[in-house]
Image 1 (cartoon, helix red, strand yellow):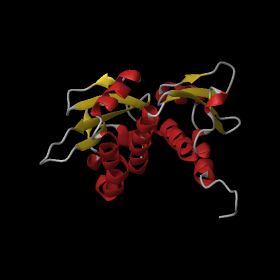
Image 2: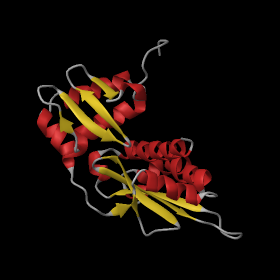
Image 3: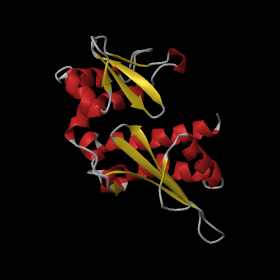
Image 4: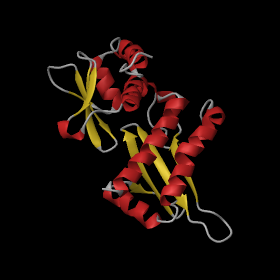
Length: 207
């Protein structure tokens, strides 16, 4: 790869080509975003920030310029989410990552980057995780010792769960998704959603 070349450019170009074939108002409505009047820009909530997807300029940026650039892998996720968001509504049923098509194939990497990461980060400080959930106004869930539901995208809820261990049983965790998430994003992207969300939670701990 030539030095300085964006490693996500080819995937982004393919994604833009797919998005530009779709109705702009439909994209905004299906994704849970909003269309800026008189423009080809969709504003979409991603985790705790608002992003602007400009289909004319083919750019994705945060509404607030002081929040820095949008990471390349996140830009691809946003594009894929926009393209797939019209495929399904929320099922309001939680499933594990393994239940998605190909989930077993990607599970080892998913477990390392998401479940094990979450258990290491918060296994000895579950009250900190609870406080983070409160701070982001996540919906408490009745699972494990600490659990809550937050939204990566408007139609992409994610539930994190921690079970506190003891002298005999180690602390464990899980990350759950809406059953229709696999109709919106491919399984590999859902894995990235989980890992990105867990990294975001650890960043919130430090702020």
